[in-house]
View 1 (tube, rainbow, N blue to C red):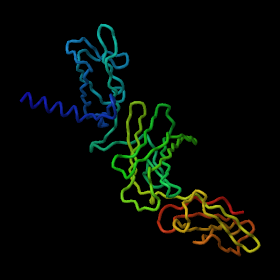
View 2: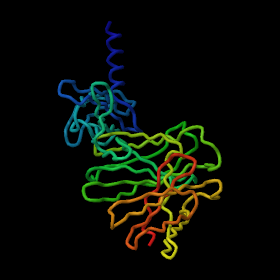
View 3: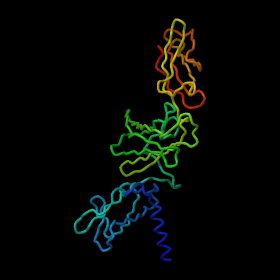
View 4: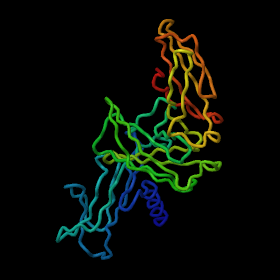
Length: 311
């Protein structure tokens, strides 16, 4: 019975944590007042069982001996646990604990990132300007924390390797948006994708850990740059060119277009569809605002932003 109880206790200890990387562990903490703290077993990295050692967390003495049982529930319980020699106070090893909040169903409670409005409840959004295999992933936080750290990568098993740049922060008012440029290695724009790309974002804010995923085919995240357009008033013709960043040849990667005419006099707008690169709008007033947007002609991905005004 004692052996069974010991095995059960050990299994519970293992279940309470998982290894993020060397010496760094994530503790899943059920975020309510009723659930007790997770008991985590720490072992000092020494082969000498008789060596006198002690444990510290910051400046606080936590215990003595090779093994320490730490109780981790809230953020003050997380952080660095260090094993030191009793006589010389030399550091032998350490373990760093992060906390991820979970609900009663074992699902991660995510609160560090702010969701995008479109698509709803999206925290990690990736978009591509063309079929080159290069795409931009972005995410947002409410307030910029100097201690928040991000790691973005593709999950193992995704089709093709993906490399990403370091995230760049852009702060606007109370929201900070982070972007990272990623590229699929050996990606062929003419071949059909059979497996989605799986992107994985890890977020660490001091001692809090969260992760987010995004799964997509490149064709699903295409959003071209806006076309460049001009308006010829003499015959009421709007012409435009393909975005410079769009894939070539155009015959293989055709775009479809929408032309918007905003009437300042009637205070309404009208939208025209076109597959060609020009359209006649003879009734446009001298102060009407005209702009163009583009989308992949054969795949229902995103429309580009509207272009700058054509005149």
